[in-house]
Image: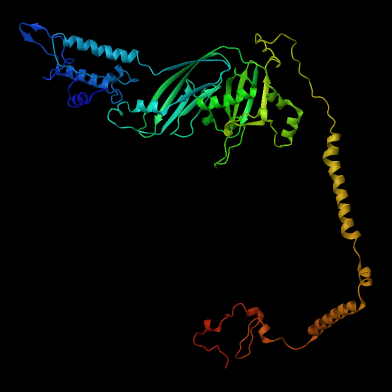
Length: 483
């Protein structure tokens, strides 16, 4: 760690290799005496050497080429105590300076190399504390500890996404991230891991080199569904060991390997409600070289399939119940057995040809298109709809006219007193209308188009348009009220 004295010396513009007299060991070159006179390096060169040293001590505070010369991946920690100075101090200090920078350049590396076999489950945990130390390398020295939210983004080098067998999960910025998956073919993948500090917006890049080596796949595999678990709670090694121990007792074997763990949402599952007691669920696949146990073979029985089809509660015998933790209990109806020894081999891949079509006869197009009979189309599009329209018309006519009762049938079914009362009302109405039409009394004045209430004079209907509706509009001083 860099001591506080060295930090104060850097702040004052002094080198930590300086002596109490103020002469810097690293800032002075080998002195040559020419005629008894001593020569010193220029002040500009001295300042460059001090900046280069500061960049080595604080690599995250410099973005110049001097900082790039030192390690940008691992911080440099020095504890210096120089009490004496001799003639060879300048040369020795330069050697020490170059040694530290070269060691930080070539010795320190943040690349992580992992070798995994084909068909085995791989998990890599991204610890927030590791990247937090990269953001604040001297935080612990000064007693400043941060708990910043960090977001991880992973992709294959020179590609926008991860390989198809590898997946990444991180629930929120305050949780660790997980890279997990099962490779099915040998090869090499370089994964770029970018960590972004949401407080300072600093970014750190790490490389994860995954080398997949070939290995024989286990012949007997079982996939179980755990309903009360979520993917980030199952990926830690301690939880995997718990699930593995329960499945070892269920399989009755110790040679059990974890093959794959998949989130239920990736298999088409429904998103659970954001309430307590609701989980996404995970699928866990394990494999072994030994054949299935009797408890596992119960999944293939007709009785178990019938209960699962009827959605009834599965009755698990006591000797097949090895669920120590209730959260690790499996769902029997979603348990599947895979016997790779009985699986049919995949068909061979199609052979690639030359890409050139074989020679054949010349194409001879027809001189005229063949004759076509349009009578069936005419029957379907014209005759059939016309027949249907006629049938509907006859049916509607029968309903509207063929089923009417008629006046005679109605009168026969009606009471005679009611008919007499009905007829008298009609006769009286006709008589009143005849009398009103034959009366010779002039109509009331109020029914005429316009009249004068005082004099009784009325205007001609032909001139009623030119007479104002209100007499006051013609003579504002006239009294229009009746006397």
